[in-house]
Image 1 (tube, each protein chain N blue to C red):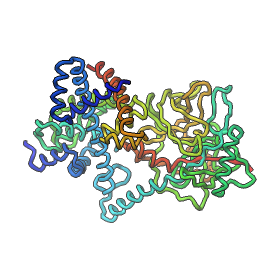
Image 2: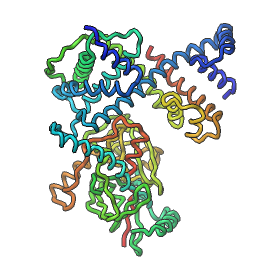
Image 3: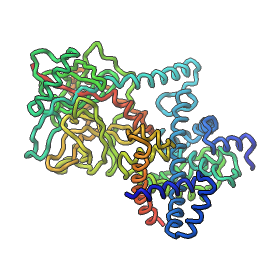
Image 4: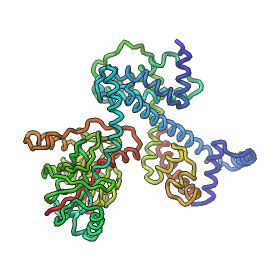
Length: 370
Length: 188
C-alpha cells in the first residue's frame, strides 16, 4: 500500500464533500484538468460517494422506521397482532404496562442460559467423519482443572464427588426455565447451567430424544430469575439456501459469537434432519441456537465434518416442534407446560443489540455423573 | 388535489428525518395498510414490511426538491402499498381475488418503477458491504452510516491512533469499491 494513494483518496473525499480550503481546491481543480487519471478517479469516487450517501440514508431511515414502530406499539397507538385490541381504557393501560415490563424482562432474561460449553466430547460418529461439538473431559483435562478451581471459588453446584462428563450450549425455550440442548451433550445423571455472567444454576434433565439429538432441561434453582419474555421465536418452516445465520455458544468459558450461512438444505450424507452450515464451530458449540438475521431460531448446532474446516450441521428448528408434540402425545410429565414464543422482537434490530438481548438466554451446560 | 399545508410540513419533516413527523405519518397510515394486507392473505409481518417499504419510497421521493405530492399522503401510501402487495402476491403465486377497501387510489406505476431501481442500487451496495467481512464492514459502517470520525473509530476498533484507523479504512474502502464496481458494471 502506498502512502500517496491514501493521501490522494483522502484529498478526493475532502474535495467531493467540500471540505477543502479555497486555495487547495483551486490547486486540486488544476490537478484534475492536467491529469486525466486523477480526474477519472474523482469521477469514479463521486459516483461511489453518491451511491454510498443514498445507501446510508436509507439504512438510517429504516432504523428510524423500526424505532417508530416499536415506540408506537409500546404506546398502544398501533397493533401488530400480539394482542387483541379491546379498546377499553383500563386494558389499554394494562397492555402498555405489559409491553414495558416485557421489554424490561427481555433485558433481564439474559441471565439464565450460559452454562453449557466446558467439557468437550469427541464422539466419532459415522466413521469418524463427524465430530460432535460437545467437549470431552479427557481432551481438556487441564482446562477442566482450571475450570474446577474457578468453580470452587464461586462454590460450584456440581456435587462434590461428581465427575464432569461433557459440556455444550443450551438456550431458553420459554420463560419458565426450560432449556434446549443436544442429546449428546447430556451424558450423565445431572447438569448445571451457567449464564453468560457466570452464574450457575442446578438443572434437571427432563427429556432426551436421541433420535433427533435434542434434549430438554429445566432449571431448578431458587436463585434463578426467569425472564418475563424471550426476545426470539423458533421458526417452524425451513429457511433458504444462502440465508445468513449466526450462533452463540460456549466453546470456552466465555460466550462466543459466530456467523455464516446456510450451505445446504440437508446435512451429512443428505440427512434430512439437519442443515449444512458454513460456520466455524468448535467443541462446546453443541446445542447452541442458530439464528437467522431476523432473530428467529432456525436450528440447533450439533456436529461438524471432521475433515473439512468450517462445515457444521444443525438440527432443523421444526423438529423442536415435532419433539414437543411427541412428548405431549406420550404424556411425558413436565413437558406439556412448555410454551414456545411465537414472535421475535429482534426483527430489524441491529446485530449488536440482537446479541445483547439473546446473550441472556444462552447457557453453558455442564453434565456430570455421580 | 393539492396537499394541504399540514401535509407539506409533514413531508418536509419526513425528508429531514424528524422523529415526530415520521411517527405521525406512521401512526396515521399504518392501520389502514395493515387492514388491507390482512384482508388479502397477508400476515402482520407482511403488513409491516410493505408499509415500511412504502414509507421508504415516500421518504426518498420527499428528498428531492422538485417533489410535489399531487394527492393526499394517505392516498399515496395506500396506492403504493396496494401495488407492492399485489406484486408480492403474484410472485408468490398466490394471486387470488384481491379485496379493496373503499379507499381512493392513484396511479403509481412510475413511482414503483423508480422505487425498484433504487432497491436494485441499494442491493448492490448492500451485497458489497455484506461480502466485505470484518472488521472492514463495521469500520466502514461506522464511518459512512453512523458518521463517526476517525478518532472515535480508532477507539472503537482498538487502533493505536487515528492514522492507523485511516490506513485500515483506506484498505477497506478500496476493497468495497472493487466489490461495488464489479457488481455495478454488470448491472449497467
